[in-house]
Image (cartoon, rainbow, N blue to C red; front, side, top):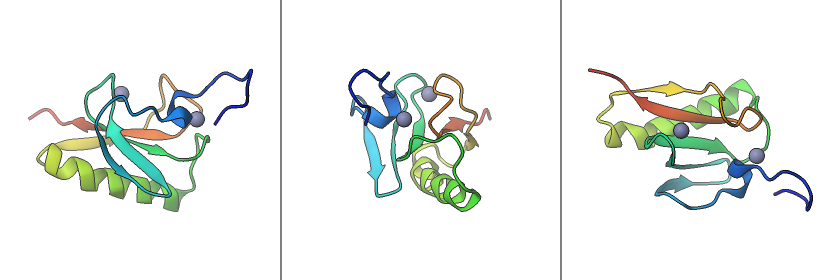
Amino acid sequence: MGVMGEVACELCEAARVTDWYHEDDLCWIAECEACFVPMVVWKRHDPNPPEEVRAELHQRLSGVAGPLLANEFWIDDRLRSIPDHYHAHARRRPR
Ligand SMILES: [Zn+2]
Ligand SMILES: [Zn+2]
């Protein structure tokens, strides 16, 4: 959560504007409001999770995305619009 006067981070704010699929101590998973696919967001404002955390996040995202996207997805964790807070998209794989 941002201090007054700081630029707020959209992912720290975690506004529930779309469907939420999952939440726990490590992360939350919701539909990305821009891409309409499941997205996992680490609950830390940091772009570089340790390898074991990254693996956990991807595993949880796969658990949600698998049934939703009939296992036709790939995990895209390049940070574009929000480069300083780790998140990853499960993108549809073209058939
Ligand atoms: Zn997106
Ligand atoms: Zn953040």
